[in-house]
Image (cartoon, rainbow, N blue to C red; front, top):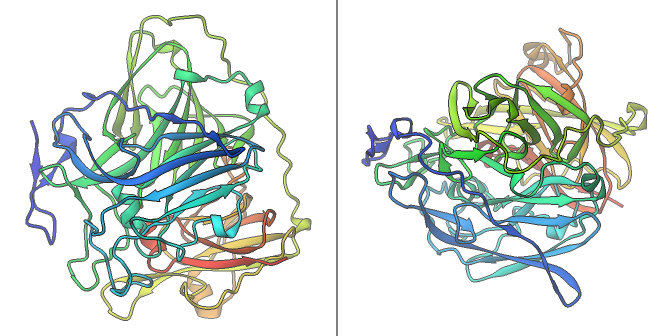
Length: 501
């Protein structure tokens, strides 16, 4: 039976309370695999942005969403390292948005179309013109072919909308999907594959009682932006609290957090171990055994779970005490397993600090905007449209230190590049605000073992300086860095950088 909760602020519609819905009544959807074909001698794939109506739960009416393809989750694109790929992104969306646009925000004026889109392949090393620059959006009825060299190691990438000012709404509507790059190293590891390798894409949504998406606002129709968004409904692969039938054997899960603002802290209900073998930009040097792990928005973790100890039982994957999904473990495996957890994976050489030619300090701020009703989120106190100040040289290495003066943890993302985390260190924020001087009040802390691989997202905790070391390789051109809490990014925690030859 469908449960409703009181109307949301600014809304006359009763709201759905998803935690009162019967859990584990829907099987986990497994996205289709889209393998590129050859067209004129080039590897090619095509995806269409379109409006879909999908069932998020057995007892909830179909929900209007915008997706890459007709299903609730976009197909998984499979690519190979060293095999360039062209993808045509077709915009077949309606011309009117169904979520509340804040026209007062930069790039969202009423002089631009309400519906516009541009795809960013997150984690891809690609040319600027194919990166999904926020101002390169296009409207329904148009399409764009982007070229991806795939000159990078096996990794879990993902794609999402990046249109200036409204990507928080377009992503919330459903415009995201996963792309897997494979290579010979991965082939040699004999990891779980086929039906034993499963994507898990996490996000949260609010729904009205009739099953439609609801995105909260400030209550001010002229400035509806809100600083963060945390919803009632917790979904995995497009279903509210689904179940998955598994065998008592080793499985590989490619986990991805596509939520606008929510962080997930994931663990198994019986406290059995989770083995992490990879992060954003590919494999770790060796497996790391964990009781739990945290995914910030846009982060990925490549994990292994061995269900052999739980034959005939049920387990749950939980987020802070709330069960996200159920594993129903069969009594017996259908065939002998040939998969195992590798002892080592691939060498990762730590980038020496001495290789850096420059250290850049990036401050993270929030403060009241000119309307005095909401917060601005800025990097180095600068807005998106101000002149570019970060201009690294191609094929050089820099240290970037993020000085977090806010009360939030910000997941910072750099386009084009991968990087390594150096350390984190607490500092006196009041002293910095008054004197503009860094006074450390604790020792530096190295990254956790499961952060020791190549990354493109780094969690920057409140009151800490988080340092990364970046080698700017690939291509010259204009790119961007930003907080991946989408509400922050939209207002204006996003800045351009330019790689110069």
